[in-house]
Length: 324
Length: 210
Image 1 (spheres, chains in turn purple, cyan):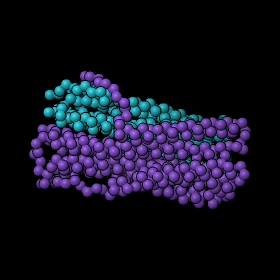
Image 2 (cartoon, helix red, strand yellow):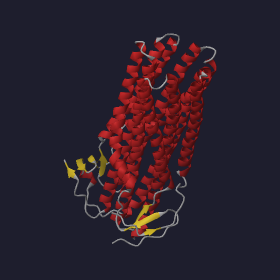
Image 3 (cartoon, one colour):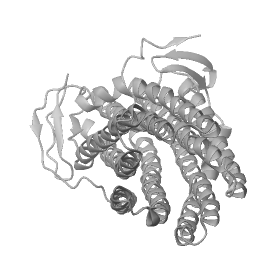
Image 4 (tube, helix red, strand yellow):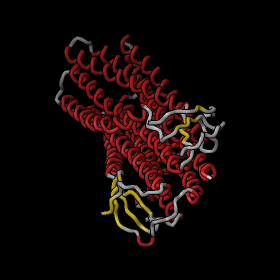
């Protein structure tokens, strides 16, 4: 247990450099909250209109309110993505700092990197031991390539949906069938965009994991030590599965909403809409669950890295590592 | 032997004689991220199933009051899922902050230097406050939907009043979700701050060790 001895001076909680992205991200997320408040005020007015029996204007109000609310979530998610981008930069800078500091901190080598290979058990799971840095995993390459296009496509889809929701709002009073058809496009497109944004965030988390893996191996290899790399934990495998499933659900709901838009004059439209709403939210739920597992994986990988680094600095190797 | 802490002006830090333990939010994060995720993974399929049931009874021409009641129960189940999954994300972020805190302390301890630990940044405090507010907004909305659903199913609530409340609750839910996302962005910004401190500290260690 720690004992605080001295409390030293306070400084700004935002660092310079990476601070810019963090500030921008938090600002975007705050903008998302403001848009959500606009949508809430609209909901309060629309609800009061229903209670007062003035139902005529309510569908139009709900139409643009939906568009604004979904754009609010997308803006806040974009903010989260920007902060994550800042973390990627910090992780890389941390590898550089470790590369500079470690040669002056590690104890004289007892390991012969060239003859070390195999698998060891650590408190954080199985790890491979090799003489060189391991090759990059396919999922890490895909993550680095795809996070930015997915986020860009997601933002475009959500904001295109917002424009459609304003058009839908205008047509609700004059042509209810056209309004319903447009509404189906709005919901399908905006939730596809939300799915793409969460997919992009997932890939950003994958990029952080890739940087941790490559950076950790690089530091060990530069020291001329055996390279210990944590094997892909179960949480990482489940993360990939949930992300893929969530993206498939979001693409399926988009296709089904496109089909529903052709049935706007048909009684089956209400039936289809009744389960498509929960389906699109279910898809987002899967993507968010995958993000939880990605964060849990980052915590595990960081724990393993600290374990390895302190093992290199310490005079005695960790006794809880077992070669298998 | 641990050396005396060095006074610094760039970060607010605490100095200690041994690697620090995780603080209360970090301990809670480590304990609760998985139960929250499990709850979310149970709630989402229930919400979807209620949506399918609602579609079936619409198709069968059931009473509008019953359709509206099931709609409210379905939304409640889905938002139990969202409240839980956002809580799980927040707890997982707290867990990461805990790992960095403990690991950073252990690294300094192994190096035989003074152990400096960053005090909780303002971003982390805002993260905790907003997360709790967002959680309360979502839980209140879920309770509201359940009450409206029961009222509609029992016939004690008129359809128009039920619809009015469902629209109002939708607004509250939306602000709750957006606030949760803002809290998460602040939690991640706290990680940026902590990593920045760690980079600075890493560069100091060789000289301090001598």
